[in-house]
Image (cartoon, rainbow, N blue to C red; front, side, top):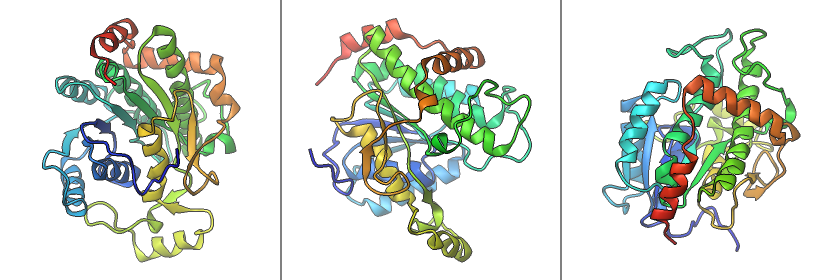
Length: 321
């Protein structure tokens, strides 16, 4: 099937949750899903920013249904917030897809911890999403749904092995970011292995947006307003960059294309930019020993054990074509 990211298949009746919906990749993924007829739970940390993003989608997709978007406060760095949001979503019925997008792209220069005591980059980019996916596994299974973890091309550039995932020693902002993306990608592949083994009808896919920058992204009131200097600097790199609107293409295809399968890795055609294609993932993210270690660390840190047996039963009871 030829895939046109500018003209998605009809997603009417489908329901998705996107973390970090108020700006960047999460906003554009949400807009693209709504434009195709889906309902989207738009989540983020700041109610006002979420409201502005929802208003932007209403302006830009005027023919969308009044209930096509619903905002929900969810801070992936705070496990209490994750549990609260997940409980709210579980009461709304089956969920067709979960886009685990929110994250810190520009880490602090010195190590910081969250209210739960975890290193903030690993907590936000990895632990919150691990917990959320586990908490929502049953409603995903009821719809034979899909989860998409957002990786990064940085895992091939600098494949740090996260033996100390929370960087108790040796913290640098770059290392924290890359390790979080190695962990995210490895957990996405490990999730698919475990879901298959348990007979849960949920697929787990990893996608990355290439080199997507704000300065090449359309200006949208309340969502994206880069300065003239940012526009100038980012346009100087135009040969190897793209807008976040286009960066979201890989994430959305991984989430909704019926020809995408669990355990796959998707990204832009030239790695940094372009239309989405299936790609090879870096070796470290495919290492089952690394993945098993990260899975155990994530369970211990979050207190969330994915309910595979329960989800398999929910999938059998709620299966739909």
